[in-house]
Length: 437
Image (cartoon, rainbow, N blue to C red; front, side, top):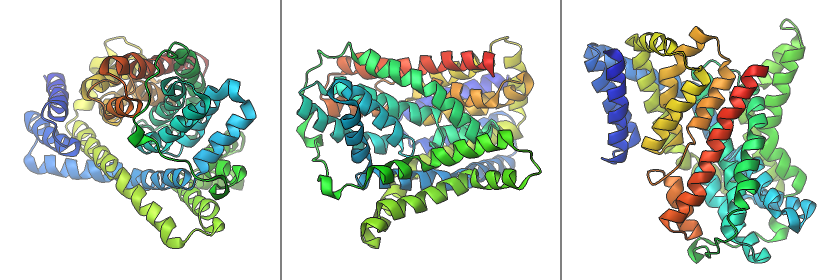
């Protein structure tokens, strides 16, 4: 019976978000209340669980999410992303223009939240398409595949970061494993898949084409790369140091401090403010304006994550998660495949990768302890499942359709297939890594 109640709650969440088009945060609150009542919890205990869940989830994540948004906005608004793209195109040459855009999407996508990255990087695709006379879809898919992979696989993006916390994974190792999986995913979904898309010659809507910044206004390549990649460098280096150094040594404690997500993102933002802003004589007011815009951009994501935390806490306080863990354990399904499958189903039903990932975490987190599966790989399997087959209930689907001026049918044949390739490749990669790690 408890399992049926949870299934009904998820179905209700899907209906509220998709059919009723209710705000996702409010949908989480309503579903949490009703699920608590159905599980015979006292109303005071239900509201306490909701408040505790929101507080626990956002308490450790809000700094990472907000700082990540600030850094991403700085990279985009300062022209650092444009500088990285231009440098890679010169380095690789016209023949490998897709690979240049793909690598740019990956580098810039690590600190840049997906929706922000989409809106700010797509005009760069259109500029390159105009210069090379190549179809915008053919050039755009590799870059957008990179943005999608970083969004679903890698911290400090909201869903992977939240999954790291809920699965008690290591954020540095998750990032390292995620990068290993990201390479085949973006290559298959990007340059390989886009070879079949050269016949899509529709011109992008002119209202979305933005002129690039003049060359003299762009930051230097070294500064751009260092600002964008500092979070990755800190997390990767500190994770490797902790694998090689004993726990009682000073270097280990220093690496633990520098590798803490809060410290990493704070240092990255301060570094970005200096290198991409103040060092280039930008007014402090303008830099702070970019910070303020970044917070507004990410406010909805913060609420969604808080709502998912309420649902998670209710599952924990009602002891349903223990019941679900035992039930799923008896299904004899590989935990990685289970996490991917549940996330994929919720993604297809709801459309939001973030909601799919976080809702799945609420269900499968107890399975990690019972099965002994690597929690870092569970983060990646869940993240990969949350990217499965984006279609008409996903905002990203409509953004791609409108920006690239495609029909719904053609958007499914390009965008939706690309997202599916990214998802399935991630699943296969995690299963392979599970046999090695």
